[in-house]
Picture (cartoon, rainbow, N blue to C red):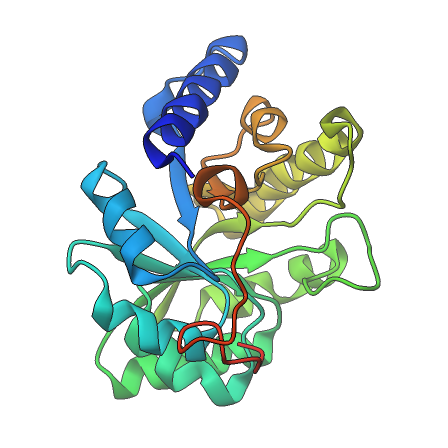
Length: 239
């Protein structure tokens, strides 16, 4: 793995996608998806200037975050069970995967107990895949205002995971739909939403062209994940 070369390639692709969409590259956050990778890889990435890291499992993050550089800023991107919310609120500065009012309530409760406010993204199953978590768009709109009214969380935007496709153009309509849904949400609550988290290693350029402000990059940055039975990778429990 050549992290320097990988990061340079990704940054050039982000800049090119922004140029095609007439956007400022500063509008796009590169979230380094570090799940399955050791603290040493995170330190190397941080030394290259990366700041934001995403983890999918609370148990893995509990082990890894204390071993990583203190300047790293952590976001939860995986499915979050309510019995892990207390730890998630402690560990992360944003939770991207809020997919129900019940989960939002639980986050709000633990934020109150920990005297903090949590930025969240609402996860949308924009493609309607049965295997994926996330709100159906109509249910999201139904829950939006009461989630937005919770006092200890702040709705910063929407997140989606597009279906896998060898041709990224095939998922462009999914990203476009999320952007349109963000506008619907803004109209519903009467305030702008800052983020669209969409696009991963195989499709982030198309996502940027469609308005992504956060792209979640793992494999093409760090290489294939080593799910060896080590301390970091031993937890198989879902986040």
